[in-house]
Length: 272
Image 1: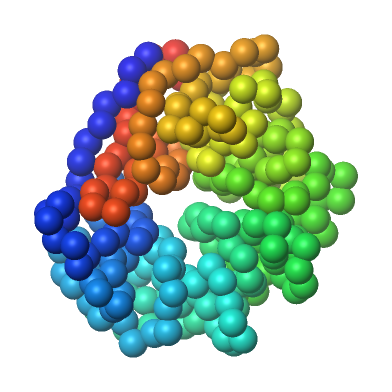
Image 2: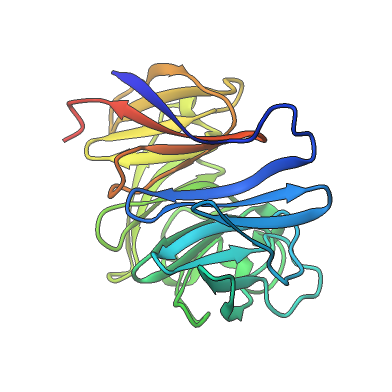
């Protein structure tokens, strides 16, 4: 088992005025990113720079389809809307409020998944659900704590990634069970994970294997784990902020640093 690293975007190291904030990459759509130059945010869509007329503060960006993407403020300060769906020309098509203290966002054909960290879960409003699926108009169609009252509770949703079909995987504090939810069936499957993996900041699920990045006290370390095994295997050490890509992508993770964006593919013939 080994890691293949591919750099897909870089900023010159001596360009101290420009830093990467967030990015998303899909094999079929390319690269969309948010960067900050001095005190101004910029969007870059496959090399075309846009200047959104939005009040944004260290936002997330995600592809929706080849003509649309979203940009979202994870923290709200009285704003009525904090998620904006835009076309690749930079025009806002629609917007809605998706809750405060958003930890991560994943997009599927069913809609937009938002997970929340503890300040949202123990706050008020939609964030208290821990994990919500919105349709593209902003209406919640699946709410974790409401629709799955018997599932392990979420105090802080550390990581999410898309699974097969309509499913989504999550890795929540406090018990750090790896959970697969199916919003169509309002069902879930939970797996106990080895303590070595607890606190992981990113996950990617492929076939029989799950990959976990940067657990507690093991900053930057990437592990593989086969469900129900008693232990996890260390693959290597990486740097930056990683996010798991869904099963439809060749790479397993996207990695973001201030000056570069990389994708990481794990070579593991035993996945399927």
